[in-house]
Image (cartoon, rainbow, N blue to C red; front, side, top):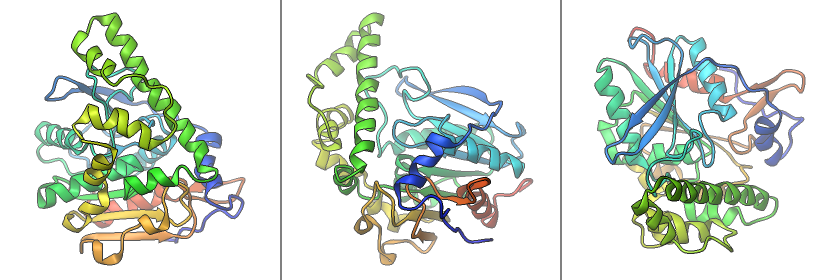
Length: 331
């Protein structure tokens, strides 16, 4: 296929990162929502698009931090997959579908157990359906961690991970540098709202135990970095001793060597969320993994084409990768 050539009118790493969220019109998709109950009583909302017949392959799409199934890179990918005649299902992580989840715990970069439940339920509902998955940013980290944990039992024909924060600790540091602090401020605002909205809802609904778990976190004031938030919120809510413990146990870089599913990783050297030294060395990758590193593209950007006719590389690259690895209608 034609290689990726970064749009010359979007130089650097920030402009391609921001172009999609700020300038791209949202594809209008008539999707079907399914609420999936998890083993712990919580829920995930799944948004389906494409053919309803389970004989068609299905690609699971996993959004990034503070995103949702309405993120433009998710909508664009669902549109591209449907053009191939495939189903897709966009997973909203806990509390990301527009309605707070039922538990004090939420989602995070290592929540591979939630992905495992999605895949298990999809397999049980249609045992002969071909499944693949693509994760973006946080979703890519979750996916790679899951693949490394499951090995040959992943249940996926193929996978793709884009703009992955391979080392969560180093990415937390990266977001404190230069213009990237603007992204950090936006993330912090949204993540703190995610917690405080649940506190208010639980108090209103009389969910005393869950409200007590959030209240036990103490004041949320004064948090201005990922290190702060993950030390004071993510770690205690999800069973980690500290932010450092969470980063160590959930960074996908430590799981790459155990992946056996054919997996594509697409990364940009100018990603403003990820240091170049956070990227894995070739020796860390399993034989089933293809690592595609571009000089440009930003973070989940990868815009190509002209200003008048911009294109999105991931929407042709990912379907091509899946087709190459046996994700075909009728298989």
